[in-house]
Image 1 (cartoon, protein in one colour):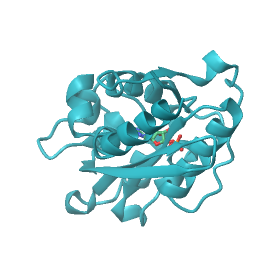
Image 2 (tube, rainbow, N blue to C red):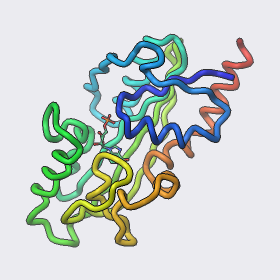
Image 3 (cartoon, rainbow, N blue to C red):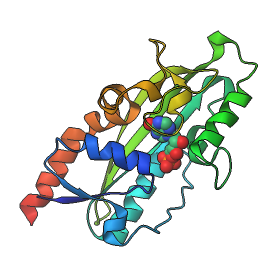
Image 4 (cartoon, helix red, strand yellow):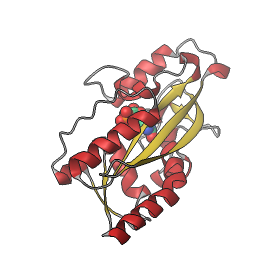
Length: 204
Ligand code: IMP
């Protein structure tokens, strides 16, 4: 079985990939298992896709095995698409998830109900040590709430409201994966992932 490196240092993403990849015939490892816990990829791309590719390629290059990475974030219409690709850095270095969503709530304090639309975006990328790379995208539509709710998930989940009124952080993991930007990106990516990885396995 091919070993795949899941190139993320984010514990929330690591948890989600553990579930999302469970059904696939791949064995996967995290950066710390390969001594790459300190690898810091400079995300200087202009899009989710570019940053996802940069991350996957950096991990594949460092580890010498195929690597999967994602770039994701929250796109808020009333803020002209912010925080977008800067979602992880929205409240500066050293900030917590709560610092970031509190800043978002503050920026949205005067925005009316019908202008609070937003979407989570995720581009997942697979990079091979020989330089080849592949991507797929997923999105989840919703609105920004007025206060945090729920203890599940990570990041901006407590302030992201689904069309049924529940906050994303209220959903158990399996329910989030079935509809989330990351779950959808990975579902769309599955055929590519299986084709590329089984090709590699044949060449071994
Ligand atoms: P990056 O992809 O590592 O640059 O960071 C993505 C950032 O977007 C995370 O640190 C979170 O703040 C946010 N984000 C991405 N996916 C999710 C999600 O599923 N729920 C909540 N926040 C997310």
